[in-house]
Image 1 (tube, one colour):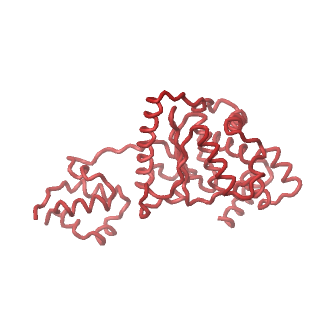
Image 2 (cartoon, one colour):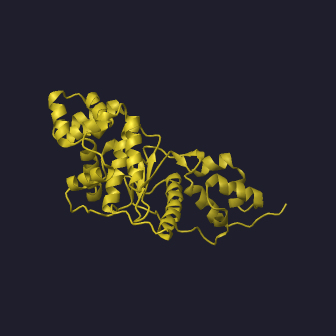
Image 3 (tube, rainbow, N blue to C red):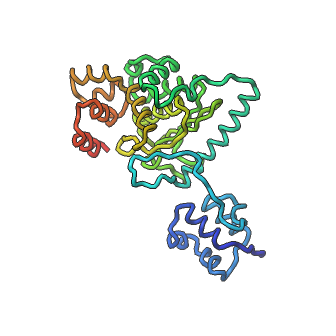
Length: 309
């Protein structure tokens, strides 16, 4: 059986790229050690199996050196000490949706569709409440829209429908494409947004709680309104320490839990669970609102978060 000459650097690069430790991978795929030590070369079929296992294009394994892959969008993480690079599963999902976005944008241009007037309509120099009001006007939703729905699922479904009616593509998924073996962990990525003047795309991690998805959805809308692509993890439901993230966080909080309505409800009965049902957001979002508006200390918020999470 014909065997293939390979560059061992590409093999080790592909294993590391897929997030495997060397010993872990060799235990599952022992032939690789022989390839690296140049004791035996792989067959074409073995190399194809290897490429599928590490999720790299087969042609990459015949390059002279590992390709330089740049992260396609900024990825904001709450904790500054964390690495802002994303896993291969998130990376591949971003690329997959970018390809769909490019196709749709080109189609809309060719068919003569008008540009949506929402992308980059505001900047972080504007007041966040002006953005909130413009989003409400565009989606045809008043301040108390969520209170008319029985549960979070119905509210999320209606909100998504209004967003898509505005010309924004919303994808709910928790795996890469249709591959159930390639999960996207909520703690790594709650969602991301790909801004485009013709076809803005939003990705929401479907494994996240429905009420938490509401917050991610509006945070991503704010990114579209200011014209900036990004991904997020929202650890402890806190934004990254970045002016753009702080701005979009303020937009999401005010849209979902308007300050006046929240304060009236809190003063009447400071019950987090009841208010979360009223506004159709997670209890942690309500606790965050209480923290931001001076109704809860940071110590009490994190205590609540840890008990709830």
